Amino acid sequence: MAETDTTTTVRGPAEGRAVDPLLLRRAMGRFATGVTVVTTRRDDGRLEGLTANSFSTVSLDPPLVLWSVARRARSFAAFSAARHFAVNVLAVEQLSLCRHFAAPHADKFAGIAIDAGLGGCPLLPDALAHFECVRETAVEGGDHVILVGRVLAASFRDGDPLVFAGGTYHQIAPIG
Ligand SMILES: Cc1cc2nc3c(=O)[nH]c(=O)nc-3n(C[C@H](O)[C@H](O)[C@H](O)COP(=O)(O)O)c2cc1C
Image (cartoon, rainbow, N blue to C red):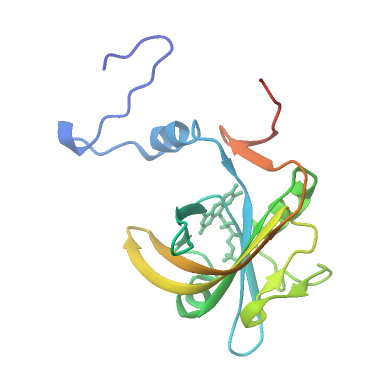
């Protein structure tokens, strides 16, 4: 594919060159996602949570979901070892929670309202949806590890999702 004014081409190893990470990130930003906060509870009781947009459905029967955790994340060891995790799908009015859980804090849950989910995983009460999962499998994924969970419980409420696209946040608008 040739480069034009409106198309930026990211060439990969097939052409003998490494894909430029910044261009790759910009290309991936064209794929709009929701935003989640994934949480878990360590064996010693400490709570962990981070903002993640890699969440996706995998299977309805059995009910499986996935997300990927960066090896460099401070919570990587906790999520790697965790038997349970919970996915909190953020509503558009929860942008501040999205930013909070994407930044380092000594205790990310200080002052944050939570309910206790399965395995002690924290649930954010006003999230649009919750998926409470038991770890099914983990798959190596380069600088991330893909965690596949079996959904043990799910809940949702009406409302509008927070959307991440092009490196920034959006709200949805119906077109039909
Ligand atoms: C919109 C958005 C999506 C993100 N998605 C992921 C993700 O899917 N996986 C991941 O490991 N980090 C993701 N991050 C980065 C983490 O939220 C961030 O590095 C966080 O500080 C990690 O927390 P921790 O260091 O306490 O583990 C995302 C950040 C933002 C803003």
